[in-house]
Amino acid sequence: MLIEECEKKLQNKFKELEEISFFNQKKVLDAFKECRVSTNHFFGSSGYGYDDVGRDTLRKVYSKVFKTDDSIVSPLITCGSHAISIVLYGLLRPGDTLLSISGDLYDTLKETLFGDGNGSLEDFGISYRQVEMNESEFDCNAIISTILKLKPKVIFIQRSRGYSSRKALSCQAMGEIFSKIREVYKEGFIVVDNCYGEFVEKTEPTEVGADVVVGSLIKNPGGGLAPTGGYIAGKQDAIDLIAKRFTSPSLGLEVGSFEMGYRLFYQGLFLAPHVVKETIKGAYLVGKLMEEKGYKVIPSSEEKAFDIIKSIVFNTEEELVKFVQNIQKISPVDSFVLPLPWDMPGYNDKVIMAAGTFVSGASIELSCDSPIKKPYIAYFQGGLTYEHIKILAEELEKLY
Ligand SMILES: *Cc1c(COP(=O)(O)O)cnc(C)c1O
Image (cartoon, rainbow, N blue to C red; front, top):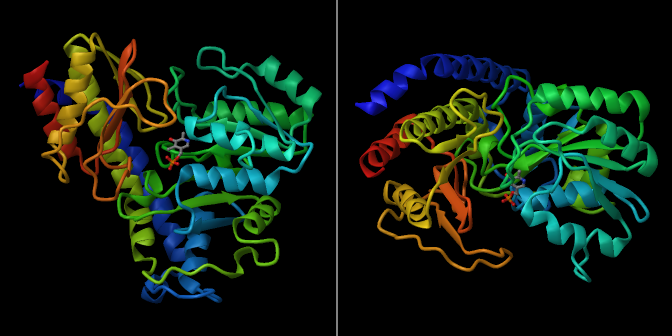
């Protein structure tokens, strides 16, 4: 009953999301057509993978979608953190500076930046600085003065909010700061961690001045089908450097095979605009329902989404745990497993996670993870179909 009312109130929001996914569906379809994608591109290769047309055509399709000179798209990239590391090691040299202008980087990158004796960037004499965000806005003056002082080789932005309390960044906000930066500083590479942001808007960061975007294929652009992998798309000089790090300086993108074949990567990309829309629609439904029940939800149902994460602020640990357990309970895989808070390596607080996913750990599928600490925030994302997320909403209606 309440759910139907929520759906009614969200009609305008849903329309807006449908318009975005229609636009992005066309963009992806056009890329497939222009690259003349054909069944023979789905077959894999083995060994060195010389002249692997499936691999190389997939790269061309990604380059068209992200409007870049070139790209690397590969199942040999193990995850998003790996993809980002390849970018950083590819572009930075000893003595260079990496500057984040959107505050903290994602947790899993800390060891890449600062690890002691583990081959981190710091070990190689690369320094890291960051400019904090002002609430959820870029601190323009601080960014410009820091850039002029440090002359960074890489200027880094995280589009999604990750587990921070700031909001995700719109392409408009990124475009504005990128052009201000480029007015005074023409060197270096602007790199955007695009995880969770692909197809959320009609534009991508590379259309508003980013030199490189990077992300995971078990999130948005894999459409729920890609079994693993990552992508990096950008300007030719950047991709050339990154490719030499990805394989080796002497090989670049001439090698790399995947005998299983590439159909799921193509088909997943084709489905991605639709899946992202289903995910966000579902997140708004759950968000609206929980708002009606008196909980604070970020972003609120009045606000625009700039990534696929929705967070709900609970009053107690018990309420939070119940929410996460219910996501597991309505999952198609491992529905019978009861998640409990546990001490996870790399985290200071206990963490509880739900991920009853087909592709292990894929967060484009309905999933949730939350540190057990005040305020009790559940970060949930994904869901391959709106209907699946609506089933979660039905459970929540009864429980809260
Ligand atoms: C998921 C994510 C990463 C890291 O990706 P993994 O695939 O988990 O290694 C980095 N940045 C952001 C914003 C992410 O959402």
